[in-house]
Length: 381
Length: 255
Image 1 (cartoon, rainbow over the protein chains, first blue to last red):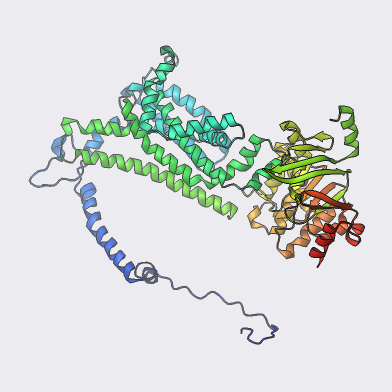
Image 2: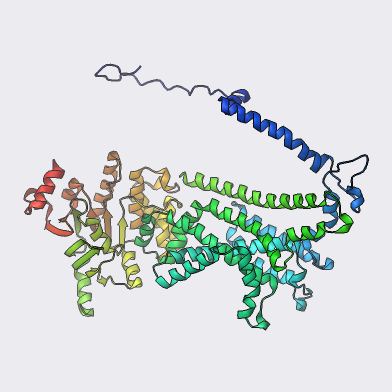
C-alpha cells in the first residue's frame, strides 16, 4: 500500500473507498457527548437532577395548577381544596387590553390594531429575504410606515381621526413604538457616527468621538432625564416636543452611540485592500462605503448589531422613569389592583412580562442566526 | 508649474509623468527624487529588492499614496489634493493588486459591473454585457455567478484584471500580481497579461517575473533604496546591466 521503498513509482491508482460507517445512533451519541469521561458523567447527572427538580414544579405552577379564568381575586386565592394555587392567568386575561393599549381610548383602539398589522407587514416584508420587491418594502418600512403610523396613532382631527395625546398611550404599544424607533434610528445614526469617528476630517472625528463617549459614559436613565428635563430648556415652549417624543429622542441617541461602536468594530475588520480596490475603481467615498465596505462590515458584525437591538429592546422598560407607561409599567400598575390582590398576582404578572420579552428577543436572535448562516453559505467564508 | 497650454501638450505626449517625486514615511525617505515619463502604449516593468519603493511609486500614480514633494501627472491631469481630479484619474487608471482584493460579498459578475454602473453610469444590462466580454477575454465566463471565495487564486486574479478592464482604462497598474499565487497558477495570470500587452494599453507592472519582463516590457526600471537606479530596454538590461546594484540583483534572482 504505502511507498516503503526508498525509491517508488506508483503503478496502479490507490482504490477509492467509502468513508468508514460512522458510529451513529442515539446510544453512540449519548456515549460520545454525555458519558465520555468521569467528569462528563458527573455533569450529566447533575444536570438531569436539576431538570427533574425544577421543570415539574415550573410546569405545575404555570400550567397544571394555574387558574385560567375568573372575575376577580377569589378565583386565585388559596382554598382548602387548593392550598397552593398556581399562576393566576385570569388576572392577565382581565387586564390584557390594558397591557396592550394602556389608556388608549377604547373606541379608537382599532387604530392601534391597524398599526400593529401594518408594522407586522413591514417587518415581514423586510425580514423575508425571498420576498418580492424588497426595495419597495424598504420604502414602505422606512418612509410610508412612520408617517402613516404617526397619523394613525396620534390622530389628525381634520381627517376624522381624533387626537390621542401620548399620555394615554401605554403598554405593548409604547414598548413597540420606543423599540422600533430606537432600532430604526440607531442603525443609520450609528453608521454615520462610526464613519465620522474614522473620518480624516478632525472636526468630524472630534464631534463623533465626543458624542459617542459622552453618551456611552452616562446611564440611559440620565439620558432620559436630560431628554425630558433639559430639552424643553433649549426649545421654545410652543415647539417643545411631547414627553414620548423626548424619550424617543433620548433612546435613539443613546442606542446610536452604542451602535456606532459596534459598526466601527465591523469597519475595522475589513482589510485595507478592500478600501484600496474600491478607490482604485474610482468610487467616491460614499459609494465606496455603501457599495463595497458597509455591506461587508455590517455582515461581519451582524451578531453584535442584533445583540445591541436586543439590549435596546429591554432597555425600553426604563422610559417609565420619565412617566411613560410602557408594557412593564402597566403590569406594575395592574398588579397593585386590590381586586386582584393575591399571593400569586405579582409572580404571574412578571412571568407574563418575562415571557413576552423573551419571545421578542429570542425571535430576533434566531432570525439573525438565520441571516448569518445564509451569508456564510453565499460567500463560503 | 506648467501652465494650461503646457498641460495640453503633455497629454499628447505622456501617459504618466513623474517629476522630482519625494515621499517620506515619518523620517524614512521612501521615494527619493523619482523622475519618470511613460509614453502612451508603453509597457514598463519595475523591479528591485523588497523595500525599494517600487510599489509605493506605483501607488502614487493613482494616488493611493500621497507624497510631500514633486508632481505626478497622469494623462495630462495633475494629481493634487483636489478630490474630483483624483477620482477622474482613478477612473482612467486600472489597478491589479497582489492580494486580488475582489469584493467577497459580490459575485464575479457584480464585482465587474460595480464601477461601470456606479461610476460610469452605465445601464446594468450594458455593464453586464461588457463584463461578460472581459470575463471571456480572461477565459472565465463560466464562473460569472460564483463568489470570489469559490475560485482559485489564479482565477481570482484574472477576475481582478477583468474588473479593472471593465472601466476601459487608458493605463493599467499591476502591483506584484503573481506574488500571492501558488506556483501552478502564475502562468495563467501571466498569459492573460501578455495577451493584454498586445492590445496597446499602457502598462506599469511591478513584478519579479523576469521572463515576463523580457517578453513584454519596452523598458525595465530597476529601483533600490527608494531611487530609480537604472532604466533600460530588456535586452540591454539583462545582458549588460550598468549599475552594480542592478548586477547584484540580477545575479541574486537569476541564480
